[in-house]
Image (cartoon, rainbow, N blue to C red):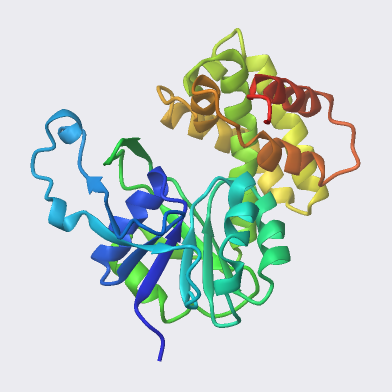
Length: 303
């Protein structure tokens, strides 16, 4: 009989948010930790009004047990919410605790992590997820920005699993998709048309439709659509200009995650979004290649 425990690997903004969501769905959460001495962590979930006062937040409802990655007990259910480029190294740290019964849900932007996870833990039951939920983390306080939509589906075709019931109970607007790869590739395409340009030019999303950047935005959309065509997603390619404009208009005042990474001197997801698209075609894509190079120049040099 399987347990009702979900381990979370990568407790950043989305990891902390989903710790609360899954707990509200009735499961026990264990946060994977690199420190064997840490028994628990407090992840306070608040609202915009709580950002300064912490009003209405109870520590007892925000404390989650920790589990040292070096332990040897098997992990039955794992949610990994690292950056896409960090998924492989993070999973390697707990590979000894994974087996053919392990359910692994990967929730992150990009596509490169799919191949990385399959190479490291091919025996696991892999599911892929994406969410439009936003969350801002300030120390031990998580501030959600809207409930968003969350999509989840199997890496290999199968029916909706029984364990998803707890997700339906705790995660707002959750939907099961047997074609989750198409969903993820669609999101990668949209991200590639928005995030890199905002990071390079230091602008909010809405500025991409202004006269100074509209031609550059349309040029990137054209090249990304060509990759979608090569991948066999003709309908996604034809819909891309409309979908990108729609997302830009809906998030006009938002700072993209890639721009935020640049502003904080962190590695971006350029490799796992733009870089991944470039590996999917033999076409020459000068604009995408150029922004990939420019993004790498904005990142901190590896040690």
